[in-house]
Amino acid sequence: MLELVPRILAFAAGIILILITLSAAIRSFVLPRNEVVRLNGYVFQGLRFIFNWAASTRSTFGLRDQVQAHYAPIALVALPIVWLAVIAAGYTMIYWGLYEGSWLECYQLSGSSLLTLGTHKTRGPIITGFTFAEATMGLLLMTLLISYLPTIYQAFSRREIVVSRLELRSGTPPSACALLQWLNRSGSLHDDASQWEQWEEWFVEIEESHTSLPILSFFRSPQPGRSWVTAAALILDTASLMFSAVDDKRDPQIEVTFKAGCLAVNRVYRFFDEGLDATPSTIIPDNDPVEDPARADFERTYQDLQEAGLPMRPARDEAWKHYREFRGRYATALEFLGKLTMAPEVKSV
View 1 (cartoon, rainbow, N blue to C red):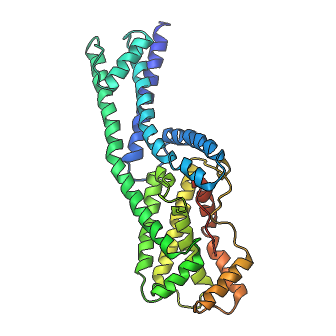
View 2: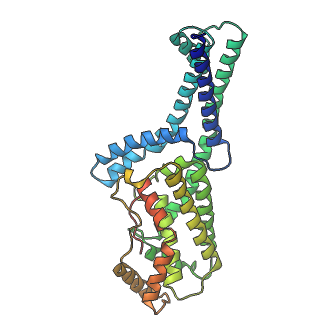
View 3: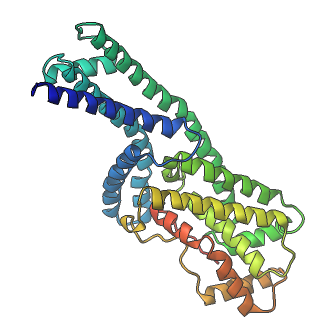
């Protein structure tokens, strides 16, 4: 009887491990909503710690960017490896609980079944059924990842198109002031809201894709000076400047885009901050993309916009107050995400 207890416990533990892994795979790639998957979080956070340490040994942002660029792809490849390892451990416990041999023999049987090698024979129909189920599970997990890789990279590509276009329009270094001047010259400030409609769609997709597939947040842009966090900051800061400092009617489409942007960055922020406890203090702290703007910077931006021919509100103190109020709706989220993803610096005004 005493010998039977550890066998039962091992069998039960194996079932639990398998169910946890299957649940993680389904919630990661099949469930159409954002949920925190703890098993995935442990994998990503463990690798993140290693990459943060490696990046901290580099002296420049460009070198740190090269290190961090490998994090997301490696984490994505490591995920199914961990899943398969947990499945193998779970079935090893099941086989041992069913008296299929020593721990080593059970592990060899589990590995042979999971990788569909078929090098070990089993005794009886029950064990055979478990080996077939394990082989099916291994194929299922790999198929899920492979089928979703195109989805992940398509979302990445759509995100980066907007990021690249913003770089062309926001100057070097990028700033909301330069982007606002370009909008004024191109007619997108008053007569054509199609640009803001595209940005609204971009924010909506960011909210959905970067919470349902959170690893997307860490896929870095092809160029070191670009980042989706920087792009979001530019669009939202530009809208804030328009609402607070530019003396003109507020286009409904720009208001909708601003609301979509605030919702998107705050929901991605809450997903990581509350769900995975990924505090910014664990990230390299010298690249804050949304540092609080000084009044002198705002005055300089106000003057540049006025010289560019934009109608400006005469009450600068009131404009400054409104600008800080608008920016307060998203600044905390962007600050967190900028440190989390090690985004390059961008001028807020």
